[in-house]
Length: 465
Ligand code: FAD
Image (cartoon, rainbow, N blue to C red; front, side):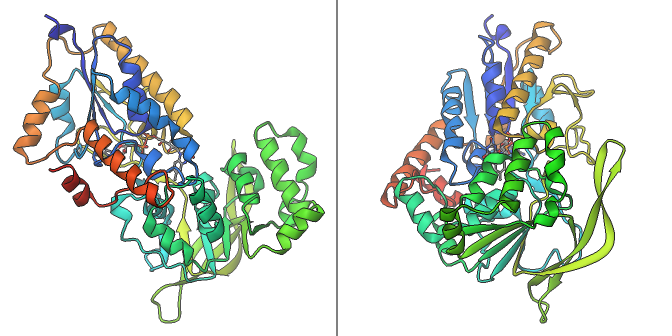
């Protein structure tokens, strides 16, 4: 029968990993792919992570939408795997299951004072300005003069840029429909008093984790000037020749910004800047310092470090010196982290990934993984795409080799019955398209590509659920 030739596959998570894996699996002309997503809306970090002033990055959504429109693909939002349905239940209903649920936790600082009001994870802060429902209550107090961001990756620079974008530049972005930042976040940022942002790293200029595009954007941010200490760059000029590209170009730009005299017009721009950002190297957080009444953050104590080569790796070790940096806001941006979602799935708690061989989950035939839950939380959408295609390829190879269960599987029909018995009501891709149209219409009034819906109750109501 045709059913026997129909491989039923499901993917958990609808971020880039989920959609790119589905796209590859659909190359098999009979395969059916169901995508389960715990949010009401698709696209993972493309919607809830990528900065609101980077609309071009979000164009991948067009490709994902094409995939979702395939008549052999279905999206089931509002279904949290591990809570509403278990992984063994999915394995029973499908020939193969791919876990692509990303990295939803953040790496804790593990220092005293971390719990003080005014200390946030960059993950939560990003979720707040991007409309992630669970972070809408964050209410960051931006009435302070100085903010400290711990970590020197692209997420740190995104957050610094959003914090420092002058209100008139935000208005300009709105005028040309270039930001979908939420209305609530925009309101708070317009009132922001933050003038200086320190971006702190344990290691030096050669170890920063951000890329040149994001650095250039910081350097060119209107009304804002960079603060770099030329001493941090001593000796780098001589070493620059040996550094492989693209780090060489990044280091050159840092060095140039730190040491070269600005040209006349640049000097004028810098002199008129009312805001500043600085990279603070060789500093590791020891303690968040409380205000005298103990009720909020007033600063951060940093250990001064120096670099030590340990085997292949370069590590920062404390010198014994310390430095206190006054600030009213601390954002920790030292990494995202995956969590285990089902006790039946092997999980490496230390590395924060599902142990796998090229996407095949070790010791569990028929179970696969892709994206950040497979590789750890590094790399851009392009990296995630390649990685997801690879997992898709392994799965199709196994299918061809007869390594997956034979005989028909019920697929979504069985899962829908289970969900319905548990009172869970999934939303479809066409439901998302209704919400999408609503968001776009709401955005038009305020000159935005969309005004995101942030309240799940309101979304369900709009859908008539
Ligand atoms: P995710 O995108 O996180 O997708 C995982 C999905 O799984 C989510 O939709 C989640 O809701 C869902 N899920 C989680 N748990 C469950 C569950 N139990 N049941 C069902 N569903 C579940 N890359 C770029 O190329 N350009 C950028 O400008 C850029 N900016 C970034 C900014 C930030 C702040 C961050 C964090 C990352 C950025 N990236 C950027 C990187 C990019 O977002 C990642 O490479 C990519 O999103 C990883 O894809 P993923 O599918 O593995 O994870």
